[in-house]
Length: 332
Ligand code: SF4
Image (cartoon, rainbow, N blue to C red; front, side, top):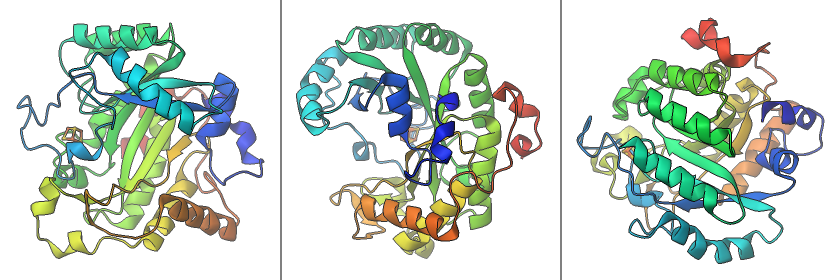
């Protein structure tokens, strides 16, 4: 994926590496994702490591609309496709996205079956597997690598922060070192790795959040999804009454933060999401009252006004990115 995006630096498109141009080159056109619930659990919810879950998590907040855990994966895809095809009429194909909970947690046979079923879905161009950095034992890594030899496969890791104090505050149950190691292990097997990141948390100073882009770049990620901290109905966060949580950054402040983050992010990293706003029925704070497209446009406007773009302030990294664990930046 990385070698495909160099041309974006000079294109008149957005001032960041967007997934559309990458998809065009990789798949020959637009692709969309079909999110499915393959019936996995989560180690910080099911008692394996904890039961309370992450502070910000409201599982209903990201459960795919077409999700029917009792339905076979292929049936979920079959039911979701007509609507998605209407929404993305020009798309070349789709990726099956194992989204909710932790899709590598549990018996490896279950994952193997889910991957095999996803591969058999007619018209699928590949698979995206959402998981946590601490749920990737060798047997799972080998399974993912074997699947990636047969089809496109991306692993999306919930990294969320590169600051251990913030990870503790969010009750993630893993450290940045564990996330960095997971990225290295996945990259060592030739897998594409995406990272989910939350910006605008009250636990980490802005400069450290921005520096997270350099740490992720040095760790070797291929893609990133950004969003801001949101207080969702049903989350543990919603029951906290700390004033900082109810005066989260405005959308303009978030846009500044995201622009700063992008400047520090390696230009080869695909930015798959710049902003995500939860549905109003789920969202307690912050209530920005603007659409994601407005926030995205503001981030682009800030970068253009500065005459910069993704990677402008990122130290270039050279050579194969498998050895990045040895770099100073990645050891932070
Ligand atoms: S965010 Fe993911 S890892 Fe955290 S509790 Fe929710 S499902 Fe589990």
